[in-house]
Amino acid sequence: MKEEIIIAGFGGQGVLSMGKILAYSGLMQGQEVSWLPSYGPEQRGGTANATVILSDERISSPVLNSFDTAIVLNQPSLERFECKVKPGGTLIFDGNGFHKFPTRTDINVYRIDATEYAYANNASKTMNMIILGGLLKVRPIVKVENVLKGLKKSLPERHHHLLDMNEKAIHIGMDLIRKIN
Amino acid sequence: MSTEKKHNTEEVRLMKGNEAIAHAAIRCGCDGYFGYPITPQSEIMETLMDLEPWNTTGMVVLQAESETASINMVYGAAGCGKKAMTSSSSPGVSLMQEGISYMVGAELPCVIVNVMRGGPGLGTIQPSQADYFQTVKGGGHGDYKLITLAPASVQEMADFMVKSFDLAFKYRTPVMILADGIIGQMMEKVVLPPFTPRWTEEEIREQTPWATLGKTPDRKPNVINSLRLEAADMEKLNLVLQSRYREIEQKEVLFEEFECADADYIIVAFGITARICQKTVELARQKGIKAGLIRPITLYPFPTAQIKEYADKVKGMISVEMSAGQMIEDVRLAVNGKVPVEFYGRMGGIVPSPEEVLEALENKLIG
Image (tube, rainbow over all chains, first blue to last red; front, top):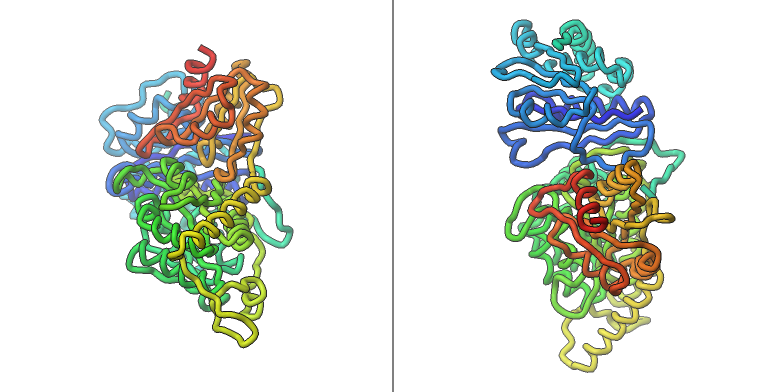
């Protein structure tokens, strides 16, 4: 198994953290993992992205130009990465603030309105976990129990009381995601 | 890649290359880190400050007022036989060149980590490999060489930290770890090296009889100096250095091959670019192109003999770098005109993709 993923959105939406949690989850199930953030000026106010690879075999290049799965959380990221999804791959987007929508028909397109849900339910801090839940519903690449193990590992102990909230967010995301093509 | 180790008692962790450097420095018994923050390597000092090794191993971590001050603090500590290090990124390492040359002149060991970013000038903060010439051909003045290790994974960031101090003290020379923004910033699995205690005063006396530790009645005073006003003395030092470099060239070459045995075309690349090119080799082989990869791990000493050997077996080579073409000169010297050596590179912080390297290989070598 090898899954090459790009997660992209505005700085502050939690894309880098979501990628980290995925990487930690892969680590928990004994996989090879790499997490490559955009650390350039785009992280400072513009779009941010993280490339995450989970693989049963050793990873050659952590730098990729095409992806099995793209998760895009803003318009510029959709425009940049829709074309980089491999045929037959998966595109997940949060439609908040979008005026143009995915057009490709050779990939599986899913919509998850996590931002809208998060604002309506005062859950903006777990917005990225809702989206991660959506991803795991349609691409069960890591087990939820390993995500929680990974979270426990990556979060300082003073934040461990938030683990339940994050688990709930994953399940909300699993219910919220829907296929649109 | 090649140096992946499994220490049974150590857990597998996930961390950034910069963090791995910091953890490994503490674990290998480093006595002092002196540095000044600069992207993309600031996590090295941040992690050290966070780990507070002065409370555990007694290692000093100090933010100097500049890179010039950092390297001179390293000089001072090294003169006392201490394991001292600094780290920076390209513009900061330029500022250190005088200090590096002085340390070579004073025959002092230290480790310098350069997490390269795009230049020239203050440049960009994105990854680059354009400091190859500066590092390998002597960025400071005088006839000297820096042993240079080029890690290609987070694991190697940790492993090379340990290895660099060993080499630095073995040959009484500064050693450079030449990484780039990607290796510094990306997270991968890593098994950290085991804890080695810092040298005691007794061990320092034993290991570094040249260090200035206070004169004892049984020996002449040790002097740490890079100034020799007598030309004959200066030449004598140069001869010592040169004979050391010949020994280093004999004994310390490290490189890695990937799919080279039956290759028609060989890519030569170091650091993160070698990882990218490994994927290129996979893509090429899927298309029926017999490509292979040679990754110099030590950039000085360069694996000249090994590359030369392949020049008789392949149709051509291509050097792929995040620069305008620097290592290619050493590849061409090794190949010595036997087969064409082409170049592909991106500059200023742009990272080539495996696909564009494959396209370059097809266009430039296969035609």
